[in-house]
Amino acid sequence: MAPTSLDPLSWLLLLPYSPSIASLTNLRVSYESGLRQALKMASHSSSRSQSTTLDIALVYEEHSLRDGSDVCPDYIHLQRLLGLIYRLICIICTEESIDIEYENDVDARVLFFSGTEDPGRTTQEHDEDRRLQNPLIPFQMLALCPKPWKRVCFLENQNGRDLRENFLQVRYNSPHADTENLDIEGVAGGVSIGTSSQNPLPGASSMQSDWKRHSSIAVGGTFDHLHAGHKLLLTMTALLLNLHENSIHSKSSLTIGITGDELLKKKQYVDQLQGWDERQAVVREFLLGILQMSSPADTLKFAQRLSNSDTGARTVREEFESGFVINYVEIFDAFGPTITDESISALVISGETRSGGLAVNDKREAKGWSSLEVFEVDVLDAALGDDSASDRTDENYQGKISSTEIRRRLHNRAAVGH
Image 1: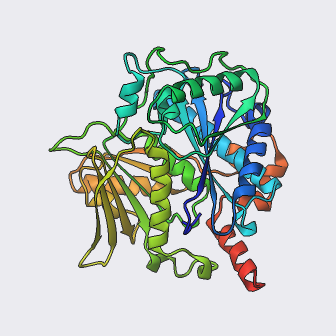
Image 2: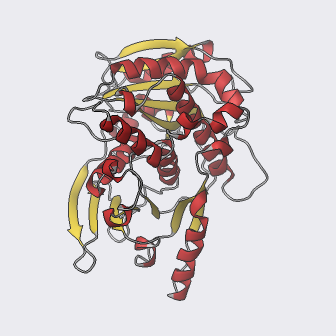
């Protein structure tokens, strides 16, 4: 979704505990009716000049599936759960004709929050925490988030109402949280399937993280007309970041390789292809939307726009007050900074670019550098569907997760003068 001249309307949908068995069927039973109602309401507020952002916050706890793997079991489960939620969003938007083509698109973003709380952390301490956060945050931090949400939606069932009350209790007790301009809206509640009966309350035991987080991570892509597949990739990358180990000598960093315009000239419907600057701006806006959850938000210390004197490659470097750095780098091959920056320790790839990860490590090993830990994110396609043949073959659904299909629709609309 391209940035608009107006600030987008911002809404929040609170979802209680997810089903212990993550399947599309179970998520539909638990969430579809509420998601559908919230998306339809948000779409009615969108227009050609002003989009609506819908943050969808889902409780995530340690009842997650264990598949016997010793490689980041929670990361694997989070990826599947996130992919299925985005898939359900795409299905609903397809059925309800919510799309950029109809100028009523909704920028849906999914993040997780823990139903437990850091021990000893007070509301005031959360209020004063300025650091960027992974998109798996404590409950109090979500409730105190400084985002300008105009409407908060909750499910009209017991778990949903309990979650609403706990959210508002924390928010009303903070001198900094905006409550006067907050509309509270109930949406259709689903049925809980194999979930925990408790919703988050302040002061419980600490949140756990079983996977290894990295201080320097790289991810790459074209990121044209940012869609649900891109959001899945970027969110899973953000979940791996160690954002809190910054010092004078070492800074946490995220490097995002964005394909240069020159490599995309032969793409289909190139007339609708977004330029590098626009794609970088959209990626940045999405990333900060899921990372800036603390109150008050981590502020930008400085930003630099650089150009490589040899290749002409553009780089946008941003450093925040916490010390965290994001580098947006224009790339012209499959390697990018992964073979020029030795400090990068992890690479996040999509399932369709697995061979690229192997090639990167071959190059690094040839230079005597440590191999990157490679995390693979499944492509958001039919493989995530487990119970609907029509979903797997629906062309309109594929158009939700394909930049080419999005460009095709925009090209066709432009051709008829709409």
